[in-house]
Image (cartoon, rainbow, N blue to C red):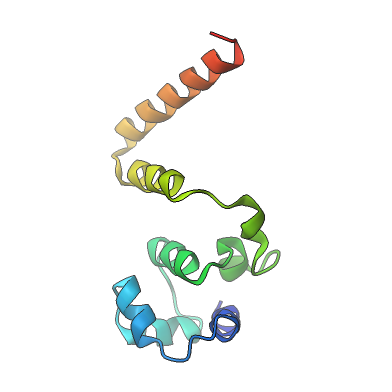
Length: 111
């Protein structure tokens, strides 16, 4: 991942990592470690990709293109819903997803 992180930092013209670290809520040393292929948490990877506007799949796995996500972007409101779901305990998240499925089913049936 370190090489791809370097690539996106160059592409986005990020010369100093302090402002990026501040926005992510991490120390500069974390970004330095990621640049050397150090481990990154899923939460930090998601935030990093959102800030740098880069595909998570590309950054973490090297699949596809750096900007492949742009054709499927979600709104800030949709992102907030996803983030809220991620913070819920498993049973509550499952209940909400069941509710979404029931709504979707009703819409499909014209109810």
